[in-house]
Image 1 (tube, rainbow, N blue to C red):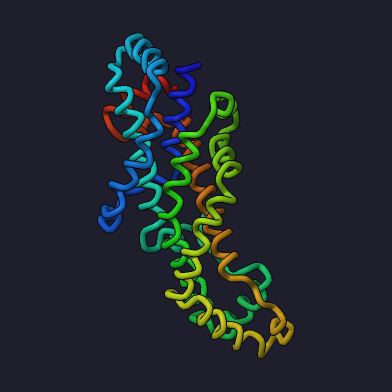
Image 2: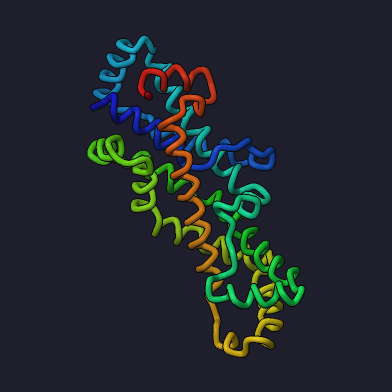
Length: 263
């Protein structure tokens, strides 16, 4: 069972978000992430003794095993935030790009036919910019979900579907993540002029579709929900990759640890 829990922790760590190269702009908060993920591998004395035995059986030292898990956690979180939290992290990725709300799809179509693409594009870009700024706030909560995972949950994830860990994270953290990042989204939508661009688009659209005048979406809630949707989409994608592809293990230490505990 100990072997299973260590393996699952490694899986969880490496799928927390999309793989990517960490932007230099992210370096300021990378050190803070180390503090969050470090606790995920702190063992009790009894667990340490068991880990030492397992490490010996695998040809790994206890230090190598612990360092490998910590490195995986740190790499997973920092690369995930670098991927989604950088400029165009959402906007340039069709899997997570935030579109206009469904109820405005017809209005978008009409505006584009009228040559008003810029009005729509400005609105869409502003929402995606807000999502970029919110993503880094997910770090501590997701790190906490790793540390609080029980042996039963680990076993279920290990034997589960390709996105079992992602389902675990979404069930465990979505409500908490929403409460954490919505205030950030509210500030970001103001700075990105989401409401201003929305009003400009709607002023033009309601001339052709008067019924839209009664539609008043909560844009902060919409952007927050879509940001989280994108987050879990990327997590599921990365989880499947790390389960199936040893090449996703990006350092010698990770390969050494995962070579024993992985496939």
